[in-house]
Image 1 (cartoon, rainbow, N blue to C red):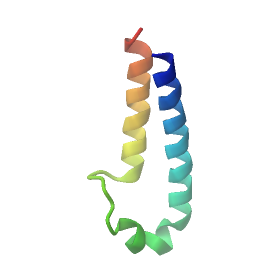
Image 2: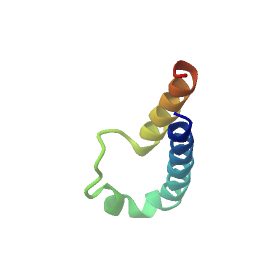
Image 3: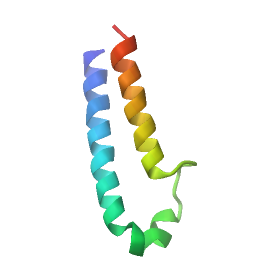
Length: 62
């Protein structure tokens, strides 16, 4: 379980970094970024949901 938690932490860090980079280019590359976007939520919402899920995993699992 500890390995899963570590991997989830790394995923959140990676998504946060990706979100930072997204913000830098979103204003002039929004058409390019939205083409083929595979999620039904805004990127920031996905990151927020991932963080919330991580907190639930940390508090609810042994």
